[in-house]
Image 1 (cartoon, rainbow, N blue to C red):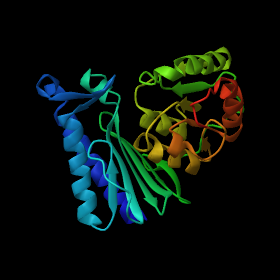
Image 2 (image 1 turned 90 degrees about the vertical axis):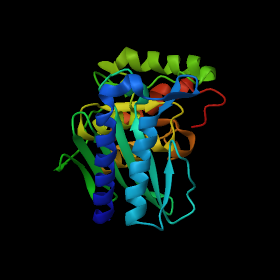
Image 3 (image 1 turned 180 degrees about the vertical axis):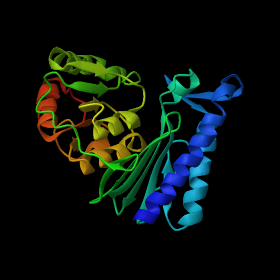
Length: 265
C-alpha cells in the first residue's frame, strides 16, 4: 500500500503546483457555475488531469472518480479525487484549500492523502497503518464532550430544504461548544480534526471526494466518523459527524432532534 500512497502524494503535489502557479492569475482564469454557489475553474480541471495522468500511469487498471471529470468505480481499486477542495476560497484569493485523494479497494477505504499547497502541509493515512501529518504519527484530541470544544462545520447553502434543520443543529452545538469554525474546505476540516487542530466536525450533503480521505485519517488517528445516526453511511448520504469517540457520540445525540424527513442519516 505504501507505493500507492507515494504515487498519490506525488499526484497531490503535482496538482498543488498547478494550483499555486495560477493563484496570481485569477483574473484570467475561466470560471463556470455548476450550480448555485458551486463553481469550477480551468485550474480545477488542470489539477484533476494532472492527478489522473499520474495515477493512470502508475496503475492503468485502477478506476478514477473525480469531482470535475467524473468516472465510474468499475474496478477493484478506485481512486476518489477532489483536485481543489475549496474552489470558492481559491477564486476569492482566500488561502485555504486542498487537494484530496483517497483509494478504495472493493468499496473499503484503504489510503488517503490531503495536501495544502499554500502551507505545503501533507496528511496521509493507510488502513491499519495510522495517520501521519508531516511524517509524524497523529492521535486525535481526546475531547470528552462538546463542552468547550472547537468544532468545524459547513453551511448547506445549496440545500435550501435543509436550512432550518441545519440552523437547529448549529444552535444546539453553538450553545455548548467553545467555538465554531467554517473554513470552506471540508477536506482540510477533517484533516484538522485528525491532527487535533479541531476537536470535531459535522456537515450536511457532502460528496464522497470531499470526505473520503479525511474520514480515513480520522479513523486511523483513533477517532470515529459516521452519519447523523452514528452509522457508517456517510459516504452514501454525505452527512458526516467526526471526532473522538466520546465527542462523536455527544454530537450525534445533540443534532439528532433536528434531523428532518429527507435528511438521510
